[in-house]
Structures are given as structure tokens and as C-alpha cells.
Length: 451
Ligand code: GLU
Ligand code: MG
Image 1: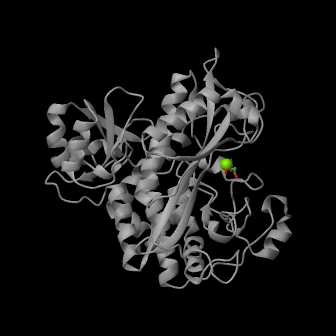
Image 2 (image 1 turned 120 degrees about the horizontal axis):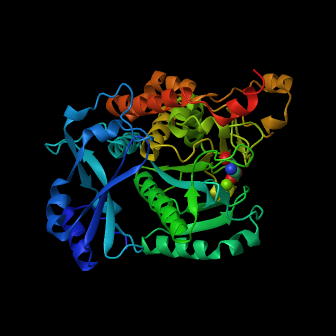
């Protein structure tokens, strides 16, 4: 169902042969939210060849749908064109005669616009190719399935346990539907399992080139949301929906290949566990740029309620073999060896996150950055003295810290690019400012009768 060839003629003929009458052209804003217009057949030709008009000002809208404080893309900022990328073509079987493409954001004269997150990832891929490498990626999200209750709140659809058969049985209609839906969109689900939290599940798809990996991730996220709604559920990918239950991660799996994408060069050929020299440098680069990468991978106030020691969500800057408490894990042995970056969550703008990860890894290769030695414990179970002894650092503990680190990191900020970085920071700092002036239920519970 998915055609990866890349020209508008192929796209137009797919739309025709699939009998499509509603063509959704989608871009993802700096918060990673899918924004779309639908086109009837009369507009297919111009959409495929010239793109679809959207308002620039929307790119400075934050998650609360308000114009961000300090916005520079205002009412007079004009338009951009969302030019469908034919490689991302997929039918949406759950909607009649409907297909979608993800889009490149272009200036109104059709020229490349460097504020486009998808374009920035493409540039990071090209940069790595110039160095003689390519990357295969897979994004593995976790999410909760909830049902709305009479109190205007939500509760998990079940209380089944981690990886339990009961967890699959309890949600089997959802599970079957979502896997079938994705298959019909050309996305092969590798596995789906019940996660630790009540009503929490996780899914993974087969690895692919980074742009395709993001396309597949968005297909997955929207299919999960839509099928959940069909079943009377609400799906949330929010990083930490409940303080006392496990958070929702977005583990990013990366392996380094030769430029032609024919040979996986991540594992060492000397043994079954270690990384090759260039695989180690790639890891070294990611470890060296962790603070800035946290600004991309954990870009909401809620993200920092997830990144806590002893929770399998990393809070510290170590990596290890098979170690689920570290920020990077090398899962598996033999041919399965690759990097699993564990700190990101689903509030990320995944094009920008992957652009940052690729650029950090490329910097590691260019500067031959050796990673620190692996650490095999769980820092959540160590005393402060032990942590000091091992010399293990902390990931940024808050969003302001992480955004400042992102801004200060020439390599990661460079990959995001001046324009995208400016607007990303505007939107994120707006969310921070509005969060800061809110009074949260915890504050009333704790102080109301006390102070
Ligand atoms: N739920 C954990 C997190 O928020 C990850 C659990 C796992 O290892 O899959 O990071
Ligand atoms: Mg998991």
C-alpha cells in the first residue's frame, strides 16, 4: 500500500488507482502535532505539484492552541506550502476512500524552507552520507488506553500486568484492529505487548531509513488514537500521565550502516557484544550531546516527571549493555546489537529529535569521541556516595535547563537549524511560562490548610 518512489506522477497515479477521493496533506508542527487539510480530486494535481497553502502563524501556536508569547510569526507572516512527499503515501483504511501524505514545508515560491523539521532531518541524513554512513531507525512508543469516567476524568481500561497474556486478551479487539490497520497502511508491526502500568501498552515496528521510521511512527500514533476512539477508549502518549504509574517512553533504536545502506557497521566483528570503532564513536557523540538532545527528546514540563532514577526511565548519563536503567542501552548480542536511546518521549518533534541524534552521532565519528565506559547497575539503587564514586552525571532536571543546553550546543542546534530552533524554543517557552503561572492541584492539597 505504501509507495516509496518519489515523484508527483507516481503519487497522482496511486491516488487514481486506489480510488481516493479525500487526500490528506499533513505537516507536523514544532510540538509534533499533525496538522492537515483534505483535498478533493479536483485539487490533487495542484497539491501534488505545488503543495497546499497553510498559515505561517500556525507554526507559533503552542499545545494550548494559543499564539505563543514572544511569537514572531504573526498575522502578517503570510503562508507556506505543504508539499506532499510521495514516499510517505499511505491509504487510511479506517476512513473511506482516504489517503495521506506527509509534507515538506516550502516557501511560497516553492523553494526549500529551513524551518521545516522534515527538511532538517533530510539534511542530517545527507550530512551523515557525506561522512560515508547511513542510519536505520525504529521508534518504539508506549501509551495508556483509558476510558472517560463520570467524574470527567479517565481511568485505565484494565489492571492487567506487564507482558501478561491477560493484557492482550483484555484489549484484543483493539490489538487486532490496530495491527490490521497498520498493515493495510504498509507498516509492519514487529510486536505489541502490555506494559507495566495499568492499561499501558507498547508497540514497535521494523526499522527503516529515518524519514520512513518517522512516517511509520506517525502512522502508528494516529492509528492507535483512532482505533482507541472506535473502541470507546482514549489513548494517551503523554510522558507521565500519572505520578504513581510508569511513564510513556519513546525509545529510539538506531544502527549505523555504510552509506549505501547495505552493511550494518554498528557491531564489532571481534566478538558478540561490543560495538565497532565507528559504532563506539557514534555512541560517544550521542553521550557527549545528551543535555542538548534532552531538549529535543523531552520537550515538555511533564517529561521531567518521567525521567526519574529507579523507574527504567533514565535520569543519568550512563549507558550499558542490556541495562534498562541507562540513557542508552545496547540490547541484544550478535547481529541485534544497536543503540536504544531511552530518554525521549512522545512529546518530541521526531524529525528534529532524529536530526539531533544523527548530528550528535556524526560529530562523534568526526571527532572520534570515545564513549565513557559502560555502567551495569541501576543508579536508582545506589547511594549518593556511590554515584559520586562512579562519576555519573545527571540529565537536565527541568525543561528550562534542557532548552538552554539545546540552544548552547552548536552541533545539535546546528542540525535543528536557526529558523526551526527559534520557533521550537518560542513554542516550548510559551508552554513553560503558562505552566509556571498555573496553580496545580498538588499545591492546594499541600498548602491550602497549612499556610
Ligand atoms: N515506561 C518506561 C519509561 O517511561 C520504560 C519501560 C521499558 O523499559 O520499556 O521509560
Ligand atoms: Mg517498554
